[in-house]
Image 1 (cartoon, rainbow, N blue to C red):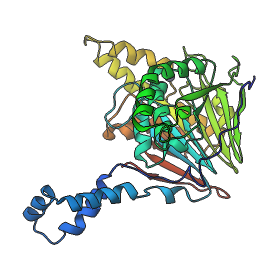
Image 2 (image 1 turned 120 degrees about the vertical axis):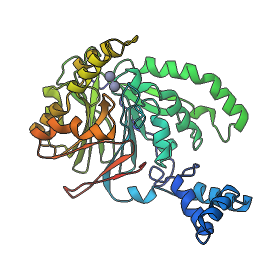
Image 3 (image 1 turned 90 degrees about the vertical axis):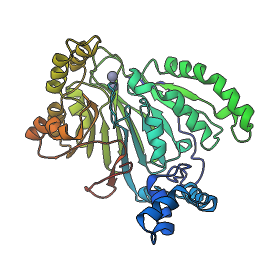
Length: 387
Ligand SMILES: [Zn+2]
Ligand SMILES: [Zn+2]
């Protein structure tokens, strides 16, 4: 295995900049909380009338509150390995899940894994400042893992007007993918520099720089592909037929670890690299449900049936992910990349066979699920940021 292009990450843009969160959006809660102060004494009909006719001064106050609110800063003040599943869906449309993305925050590092469709928006909605991202890592180049790359690079540049492009790490092919998105966004770059000026949008901060790591073809191979302070990122090969290369990642920080499988089928590589991790964020496809979709879609005039059947050979089953966690001694299994898309009522049936083989905690991730692993502890906590 080689690690032919390891680079040090750029310095953070300011003290604790990676955990400072600001949002220019108003959350529904912000609006309701602020409006409630003015409307609490009114009858319902009157309140409705009031809400429909808010004076400009009240609207301005609400907006100022929303813009100024640091919504998530305290969440990351604890010295811990923080994991957020900002995109938990897959290629098939799911009204509650955008494309794949997992975020890891540890020490002064803000690391992002994959840029599935819609994930940039979900990440921004958590209140985190994308300009503070230390590095982006890609697991493979299926469109559902890269299609937001252009938007992600753009937000990284424009949110705070950084002067350095995004560092993007991936297996061979990452340079080709990055170059394609850079070409597609080059016109947009000129519009924004022209509109806002080089002081606000430094041209040098546009886009990203690809860093290739090559793990070769041995399924068991792995390498440290990024290190900064106490944070270490290991890439390892996974088996995602017919895609080669495809990798997963393990992030270690002060004795706590998370394994991000990427897209994969069951393999010894997963068990080997998951050993001793605290949390495993795993791909999962329920083969039984997928097969039922294939059968139900046979008479439709589209490719749903054949696609639902083909994808079964490329993704791990929930119960297989549970076996990996069990064999590797991982106590918490977080299921993401949910295939097929299922309504809430089918989440427990989706996970039923996995729960039958695993005594640890199994949870279906949502967009915005935050798992916190404090250092000097074997505990964890889970909360939802976008619910
Ligand atoms: Zn894939
Ligand atoms: Zn995928």
